[in-house]
Length: 467
Ligand SMILES: Cc1cc2nc3c(=O)[nH]c(=O)nc-3n(C[C@H](O)[C@H](O)[C@H](O)COP(=O)(O)OP(=O)(O)OC[C@H]3O[C@@H](n4cnc5c(N)ncnc54)[C@H](O)[C@@H]3O)c2cc1C
Image 1 (cartoon, rainbow, N blue to C red):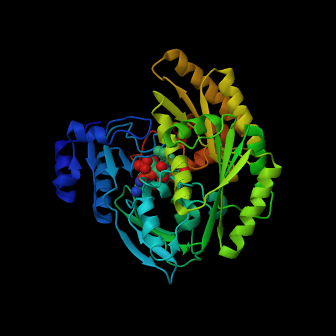
Image 2: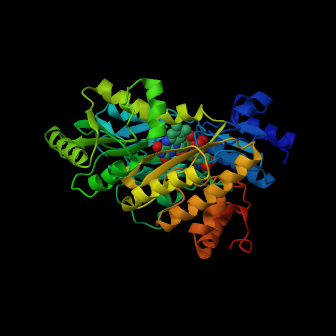
Image 3: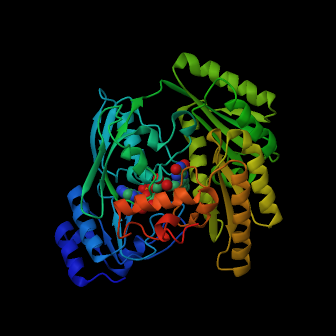
């Protein structure tokens, strides 16, 4: 696909020339996420909903692919323009439009970085819980498009649970405004929650209205170290079977801890094979006893040691390790396949066992971390995709693992989305009727299939080709 010069000129006249990039260097900067590559032909950085709608209309009329992009922190190839065309980057639409403590809501543009939003609401004593581990760089638009979760999901839920309304520009040039400012709204179809998680395949988000909560008064953080995966994953099930819902319950295996230890110098004992990072939050009078009860459960469950963060700095250090660990691991290998399964909590032990066993059987290094409190596991496999033998081994391994996870009543993706990486497995999890219905919905928004083409199966195959 080549974009005609006249069309580029027209787009430039809408956005201004500085917001329309086509030098090879600029195109390269918008050609990647954490693992995947694919060059756009034009990068457009609009500043208003109107600009987005006008650009989409022109692209639609010319049949040019458009791939929305936030910060490009996806782990699935979601923002990669694999069919060329326009990379529509919403990162410059980064204003917080309103924070209303009385209505307990905020309105933001999609390019606001999630951590900036956390800080802005925290200054007013408020709290926006969804906290992907990438929060320091990902955007709220990307979070809505992927229905991002994060460590706090176990108690507070995911991005979808905080949405009140959205503005979505669609290929026809129309602008769909869904939901609104009221906390309850059952008027018509619930497009707000439907669009969340649609991975840029229906349109481009240009405004988001979210619920915000009062900031919890206090928080306690514990790091429980175990000799092996078994007692740690059993600990997850025990904590979740208890009356206290932790604010976070993160699992980390030995390989992850070793990397983090090298970076941050925690000095973990050699015999440590797994860890749980656990937080409780709420009123000061409650969090002490809750932390003590969880500490007791971990001790009885065989934890080697349990460390409590004594200060905000210590807490920050533990979290920095958890957040930076993934990026640190990525430096170690040519390629890391990062998966995102979710299973019922009672199946966590078995899921981790199967992941590690499959890694051993295929002789491939695997690291497992996860937001274990809600059953979300992120196995990461290290290999060289340019080595045909390793690439083939990984492909067989991955397909076997997907089947094992589905047998445990699990799902392909808990929070990262499908993107490119998991599209080929959709029909293992979804029935033919659901895939076909998904395609018809996609066609209603995007009849010429210009939005983020090549991603989910229903967006790449016709009804007849779908199973
Ligand atoms: C170290 C690391 C840790 C991570 N931890 C987590 C985690 O804990 N939880 C989690 O859920 N994810 C996590 N992720 C994945 C990723 O950060 C999230 O998916 C995030 O929501 C993507 O936001 P983004 O702004 O980078 O979007 P991008 O990566 O740019 O895009 C992601 C998808 O959203 C679409 N999109 C982006 N903006 C818009 C828009 N305005 N309108 C329509 N579609 C749009 C894109 O087309 C694409 O399909 C992690 C990633 C990294 C690198």
